[in-house]
Image (cartoon, rainbow, N blue to C red; front, side, top):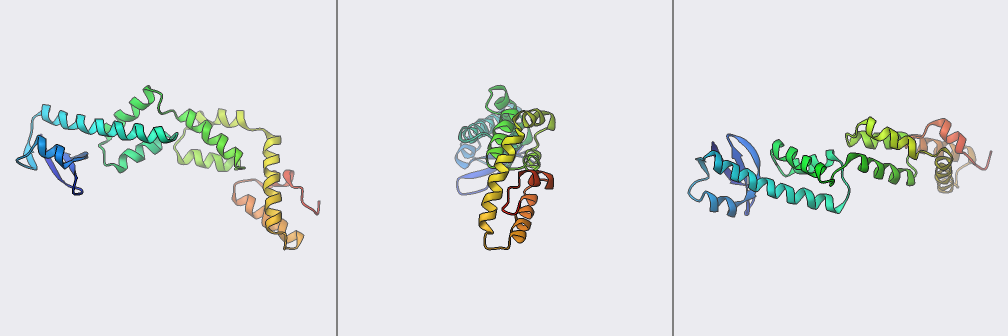
Length: 203
């Protein structure tokens, strides 16, 4: 197997095996293992040792990432991809995280849905966020339906309406209402939802 490595920075280097980049290791580690050349033929055992070093580093980085906050599988893949890891290393880390319960898209979806509902986001806006995270509808739709409370949603929408009305208090009532409707519509609320929650001064 053909090993190549070249500097990424003063302390690290890209590692390539048979012209495929597998990740980034410290120059010290690579020069300790292969001190006489940065391009040479190595055995299968030697290549597996290098891959193992990369897997250890990737595992440490992804567990640190997940320890700080809940993340989706999509976010984790992007995170490791930005570190230049080979797809097989990324896949292995993701599977291990799932097995150990560190990574769970259903749990992530529920946390995200609750957080966005509390911030007054529309169901459409929430769905768009879940789509961005590549969460399958089959995973989040039951959670979305379970957590949706029409009256609570209307109350949260009323609160947003009152804040927007205060923001546009200097406008004529009809103009303020127009601006409130436009603002909420852009946020993903339907005209029917806004109308049902409306408690403006001219009603």
